[in-house]
Length: 230
Image (cartoon, rainbow, N blue to C red; front, side, top):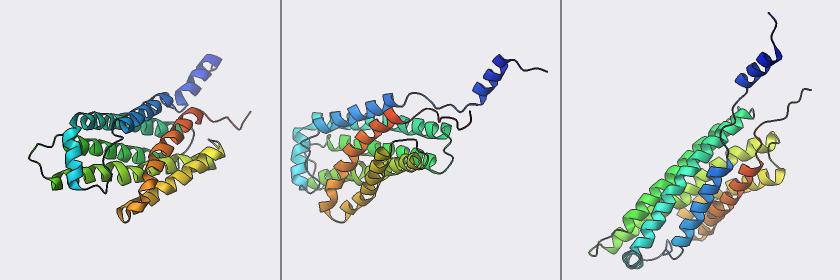
């Protein structure tokens, strides 16, 4: 039985790995929501502020805190979508090593950390007039821990999961992959914030540097790999 060219093309298309939907859309949505959250909550008390200072801020800026909690929780959705598309894209590009799975796991856990941080933040914005400083401090700490060190470590997993195969398989420019590896290392080191507050400066490096890096990845990561056979 002779196979027609049309049938051959249909068979190739049917067995071709699907790279998934466009990656840039959820990544840009995540970036915009992240920036909006930072702008809204730019005057939030520092992690070393007293419980009384946190309580006074929460009672005076409840609306801003709730809006920030909404933006933070909302940003978790496009981040999870981005991780899923990255996983599908890497698989379609022939990456069967653990990097693609690490990308998905890191993205989902980072999204979960943002969701938890948003929930704690929202709760902190609803403190009643008779709330104590200790409760305000605990909620602020939980929000910081989930949205700071926990998020940074999980996001570092996503970055490493893309950067390593991107470097080894030549999927991304070397400058992008090496930058990603540095950001992943910084994300892991940011856990030292739990031991000494002086390492807290690493957290915004991961949050903002990682977000910018993810935008570059979304724009540069190819959908298909060029065939080595003519």
